[in-house]
Length: 549
Image (cartoon, rainbow, N blue to C red; front, side):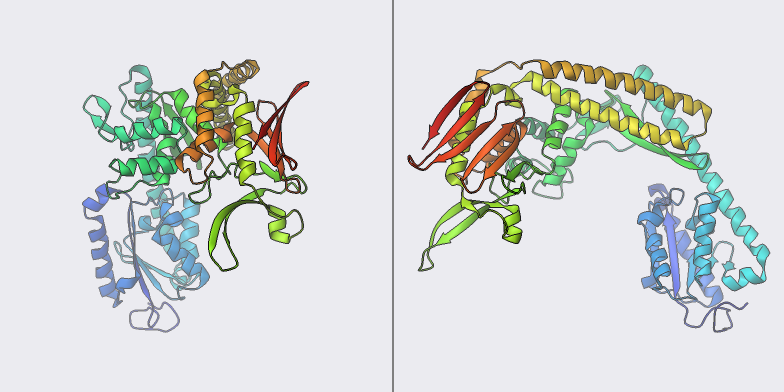
């Protein structure tokens, strides 16, 4: 046999690098000795051809499916392919695998493309189980040799496809059983605060921390605040490997619909050679921590804070960080930024920390308005909000506003489902599935129209006023005058994020205008004669003035 550029007795290129690739797709295969078996086959074939396996060139993909090409997308084989394509793996190198199904179980076109892409780049493939050698030269000299790998690829794909069909049918059967009588047991992972029992599922000891997370977030606590509280009070983290809670962990918990008992999962499968994704939602599958309405309110609150930074470091600012184009310069309409600036006297001694506002354009180009000290303006802003804002603007006090947020979240979810269903329609040819998909779309459209009508009705109503909400707002305003007020400022900022639509800063006059989402706008201007700020609320015809020193 002659393979490569320099002839040797074994037929391989002199000093060829020998790579060994192992793969198994499940924990059961690992326990069953799949890795050891593949390694033994490889050693035997290497010994037969006098090849030396470099331990540093052994690649293993654990738990990655060749049917779904996960080993190519995020596994060692994918990195190897990238290295081959970029020339990092020398032409003439040898890749030893147990069999061709370790390489791919995709459809024949995809599997063949992968196989030929390796061979065409000068990589010799050796299959240990049947001692076959595939290279450019061997395939040229023996074209019929290509029939065997084609047959093996087709068989491997068909085997995986059959297994997948059985799995999909089983899961759909369990989904149907659950919807009929609640007895279906759908496979998949379980949230860490829920344990499986002979009779179903129940909340375990970890649910206490999850209840705290939900309660505090609904009470306007920030993620950092919640993380600190859980850590300081000794709540165990999900992994039990860390002593402190992280914001990312809390965010993932708040994103999980299992909080209100919903099991949501997606299932990928092949239909007529095309991958389709089906979405399943089983309400009441798990014991709930909170209600669906509260869960949707949480999602709406998180969405309202998207692109807004509630604080820089440990400081929370009330005249910036409301989101893109929410606080702007009155001249150039560029986003306004906040800065805490340390000030020193001529001797270099620290005197105080000043809170300054910067025009984003001027800070970058020096071509707009200069910054100014804004501590007093911030205090006047808070006082004006407490005096002038309609209590209907405070979300946490109003059941109606909670309902509005919930309706918006539900409509957003339905729009996402509709988009995915339309994408599926483009990819399927199965008539039965097509009819089901169209029926589902009609059902979703009807539900969306119904919710949009309910939302319109809610938005025309005037939310009821509760006295305690004004009290809480005024209390927070009084306690948040100091920029170092920490957690209290975070709570107040989260309330402001829900009610402020835009703030326009006049740098030359050191004043501002506030536009609220549902309440009357106010302006705050500086009275140089009396050295105080004046707020004006534009309430239809009547003009109300308040002075803040």
